[in-house]
Length: 102
Image 1: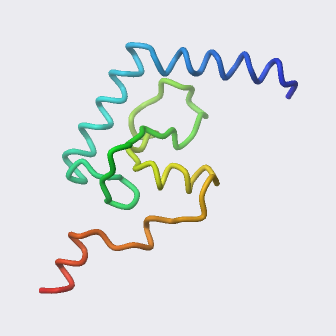
Image 2: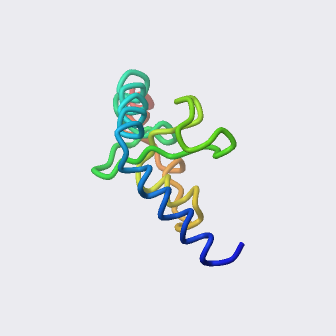
């Protein structure tokens, strides 16, 4: 894909991420994680100050059903995108460690 087209797409995507529609969808995913993962990462269970809503696929567009989105810690997000070799799923959560201690 030519760089100019990629730049146009990325600019439109960043505009979308600032939209009211995305903020509502993001809140929906965050609320789901609060109920199912105590507000932690839906992949590893950890909590971090930097949590993101990640598209599992773009097959259904940018504003897709919440089932195609995941609430992730920044470490899992970086790992999924190949920006890091650190996989938080290999480190047990405090909850998991407490279960092993009992």
